Image (cartoon, rainbow, N blue to C red; front, side, top):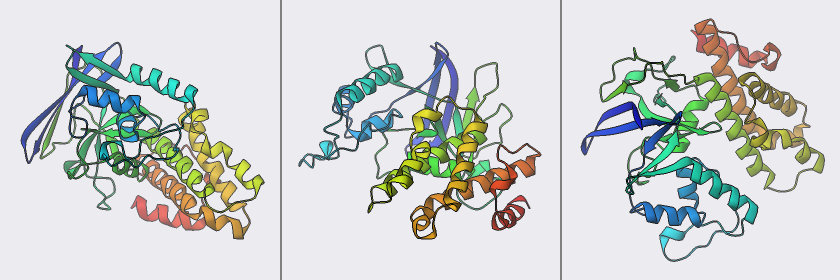
Length: 315
């Protein structure tokens, strides 16, 4: 394993160091154990039992929500049961590919390049001086916190925080000539420059969140079968994994058109999803205008209200 990045940051516990390594072309991030995952064996047991918190830590989707077991021991609350055997076998195989143990003691998870996550202070473009650092991950549009097993009561970024920031255009890649950070220092040991594509990640994260929200909407009182069936292209993330940035952007644009064609009495149920996608597209369009880049979206996707919002964001 060769060192690729070193992240040094100040915290209430003092100076913390995270070293990221390169092996077989992949980046590997260390996992620091916290309760209820006291050690690697407790963590492996949680993975074997399909506990959502453990699966999410390694950027794995919970295959089926199932019925939660509410046992007295909080370690097992929310455990997934009833998942189909083939799905769980697939999870196990992917888990093995995403984890390595070094010297029988240290556990590493396969991840992406370090990225900055700027605060939601409304500043355009985001100010990196006050940004946190996260792992861009290997999942489709899903990043990870710097310390994925950090206790929930600590004031740290969560996966949800990072993904929300990505959709709003507040995630940026690092560079060898990065802005000086007041509490964090990132060293790059590799010769080539980092290749994180913030716009691509923003689009994929929005598409992922859209699929989750549509599933939640469909679990409410019944909708006509034809509407449910027409959402399939927006719900199945797996079909988009190999798609290009432009193709993923086209799916978001297609959702805007799909929503506007819905009958008024049906469309209100998907209003939150529509606002999410419209905000993401507006953010990307504004960025393209600021940077002189070509937008991956077709101009016809935005209505006059969106155009007005873009003009404000571009200023």
